[in-house]
Image (tube, rainbow, N blue to C red; front, top):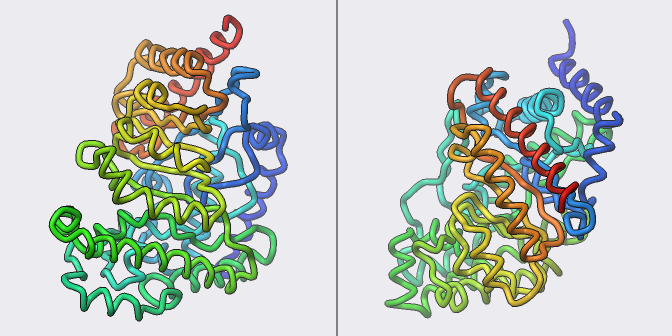
Length: 402
């Protein structure tokens, strides 16, 4: 009988062969060497490249339900078994490189990412797993009063929640890779505000900020300190320095979080983390951050800011009183790609290019992410290729005539 992981050796060989290709060298040359600790690519475009050369890297990313059409697997096992995780990761990256002609490179690394419940699970919030979709966090709060805050202080941060899985996956994948790939341990990505909402409950915590702000800020302070302690434990475990940090803040949306609210209740803790990490490599929210973008950028060390499909780019840029950081401009996945005509695609790209030039943006990447199965595998892939072809043509034409 052959080895049960022989296919993984074959996948690693193929991945490494593609990594050395001229096409991958072309892609890598578009990005800074640093990375964001997600299984999806969130590379930073080289500073000033849009201003100097009109260069705009393009990336597209599918969610796991799409990939399951191509590589059927049980996601419960994927989040628990090193071989299953590594196999699924390599299958996705190889297929995307060969069939989706964007600018996402193969960087010789495998980033472990355990989903949105990861950080809150460390404090004891239960996680629910499914064979055909990513894990979700339990909706029942675990923080009810000050006594619960005392209990949180006693949590063994590097041993609880999903941490045993993280260590099992990491150590198992290091053994499977045999030094041929860099296996990257998960990072704490969720911002303090988001974790607080999951521990306390969304409605309860929002009320706390008004009715008992001292309690709310004690929780935020505890979470912020816990993140810093966790990263110190991670550094000791890996024998590596604390990395620059990312802040994933899908819970921050201007429909419920105003500018003053962000400045008073969220920014102070993100500023502490920015000092601790030395920089925020990527600040992300899938919500609308237009009214608070200037407050985020005023942290002073945000190296790349996410502009989601629910945020108006012009509103962000006209609000800034300093040069914009590098931007990841993410278009609405359905409206601007999956249901878009070629004319709509072209118009959207032109509008982004013109706005970026008008506000003297130095560098940005144009991205469509969060893609789910829509009209069937073949048609979905064809639409992605059409968007990439249309966007490249518009960028090339704009660069010639700018």
